[in-house]
Image 1 (tube, helix red, strand yellow):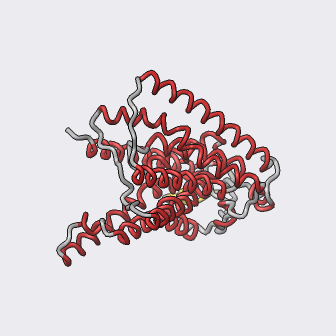
Image 2 (cartoon, rainbow, N blue to C red):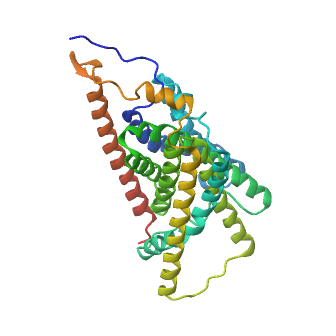
Image 3 (cartoon, rainbow, N blue to C red):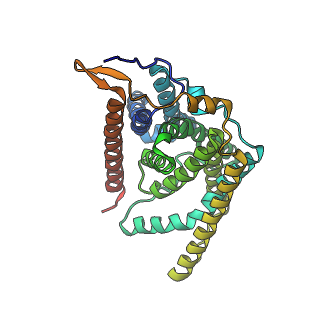
Length: 350
């Protein structure tokens, strides 16, 4: 039997890449957070401060957030480096799109929190009923305009870049061969599980689906980064304005609230569908860039006649990779679910 070797230099991702990095996208920030807690505990022992007091120091809060977000870029870089993947080609970072799509991406990013906040409010009401303690702060102060600008950078822009490179640049592109909706929904699932928060679960999934769909159709990761950054920055600005001006709670009946929720959600879905449709049309779904064309022509999946040696036996490489992808998917979902359960149990006030 003739054996074909797998090239050491790849121009695109395969399914197992996406599943494996889905797992690492979940674990990397947890590992970094744990390492930082250990470091802060040591500093606390040396200075006589508690970990909470150290985290309350503004520069430390900024650094902590940025370092945790940087873990996604580290995973992205190391995985491409170790597996000898041309990440520039594979992620489609140089793919171009119509200039109007960037404006639509901004509108889309600002629209999502406006139209879907009411729907998410019902999820938060449910969590409140089971005594789940909601997070009412960002962990970074918003007491003046300079803190606001720093928060926009640290919470709005940095996470958008770091997370999108991994979850849409690598994971979504790796799952493309599964089809549009499996790729979009699985990458959104990994993205929402990564936040390890029951409070954020529904909205991060919605955000992941919208960004994933846009990036899948346009093949442009920068549109995803813009949507993500505008969404996060808008939320930060709204929190800042609430702190500066105070909030007024108006008592309305449950039916009025439900009515507004339905209207906002329906209009929001319509706006999203319209914008995504326009972005898809402008990008020309059938007109791929030169780089994308090369990827398609070179066949992104490992061919069926490629073999590798496993335990002294010659096994089809694709079969091994498909099994690895399946196991990594199951492990990622199980670990992510476990982390959500832990968050739920530790956040409920008995």
